[in-house]
Image 1 (cartoon, rainbow, N blue to C red):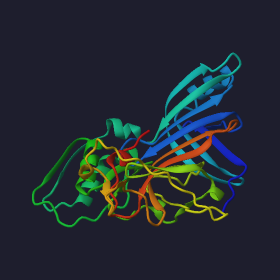
Image 2 (cartoon, helix red, strand yellow; image 1 turned 180 degrees about the vertical axis):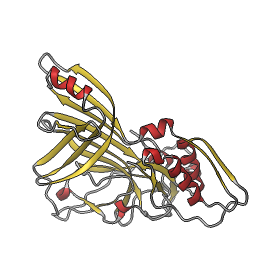
Image 3 (cartoon, rainbow, N blue to C red; image 1 turned 60 degrees about the vertical axis):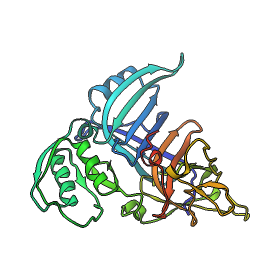
Length: 327
């Protein structure tokens, strides 16, 4: 177990070729948001008290890409790498100025990417996903593990229009949610075990490993907060430990049922004694991350990750609001 002590942060802006500027020694606040829907991964970084000359230099020269790495001690992991989309200069107080940097991953493909392709008779869903990657090849788009669905199309299939709309259609056809992790299209299937490389190792969450407060059950899943953890990405497996070092339970606060919502249309269940409860808590303590938000302040108290996760059990019924969470 790695101790989460002596936090580190590296923020580097580049001109896309060989020039770069390291902003790590200044005060930086940041927020990185990533969900399993098609919305691009975003970064909002605020750098404090740059000189006017430095601001002008960054805007004019180092205005292409930005990367953010965080960690503890001598270990640091890449949290975000994307394209700079906006600079905002302002003043927070009479003595503190700031430069806001807004960046996103492949949002140009998401906003403007199109597709114009016809699949021949006998096409499969994997063929449709590859057509998406081919259409986005100029943006470096590739396709990750594709859910296996038997059968093939009996007629040719026309794929035309916005690439993001085609991605939603392809994902819906295999009972999944499509998302773009950097430049890779991945598919999140709530009803199937995770096939993502992020799910190769379970992340243990306990008071000893950085769990903050008490996890809360939400509709179809669990919301938890911990010390900043770059490995918390969509489709990662997390184990919320049920007991702390002294043997006392780390409980998960349960959600109250909504008497105005019909139980047959949601994820409520009637117990043997006639009372109702909300499904979504894992019997094994293992969950799949559906949404992650990372927040940090190199000179302040903020340094945490908030996740929303669903039960790894394929028979659980996650709410759509969990799967498509963006904030």
